[in-house]
Length: 201
Image (cartoon, rainbow, N blue to C red; front, side, top):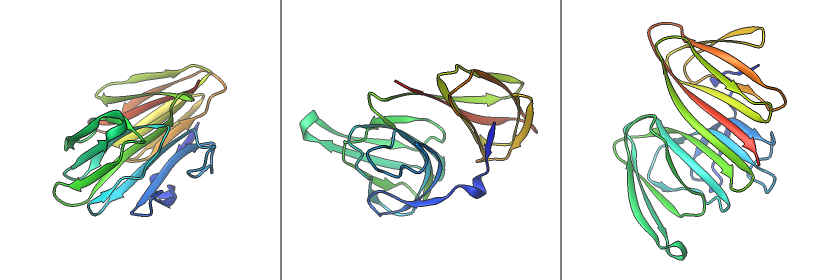
């Protein structure tokens, strides 16, 4: 299993150049925002009101990691899209299409968010938030890639003959190729883990 420490997440500019993200993982690795990109998970830092980057052909999942939240305003006449969505509850995913133009307004101060891009028709993604009060088991099929992101607390992971402790914002990545299962437990008190399963269609 591959442990990804949050201190090692590389920084990258947003596609539209309006801000900076920390990239957790992407596939293919190093694809950037080119045509070969199939999925990417990152932690954008939103420091000011700004438009979101356009990602035609991608589906997006967005949730607040820290900060007081945002209001997203969408307008896309070709699909009859015109609405606003306030996202202020932490760790509550909100999904939208990457081709929908979106303006982001901060509610009160900067935020960091969990941002998942998946190419529509090429990648299937399942995102689940698990609160850990006791041991929990996560499994994956050989065709799946699995990424665990520690949203709150510290998590001990046992699996594939290895053990690791993930601090807050650390991740664990297991690529496709073989089935695997992992036992998760909070190191102290409770913890929250985002479980992301990705399958190439």
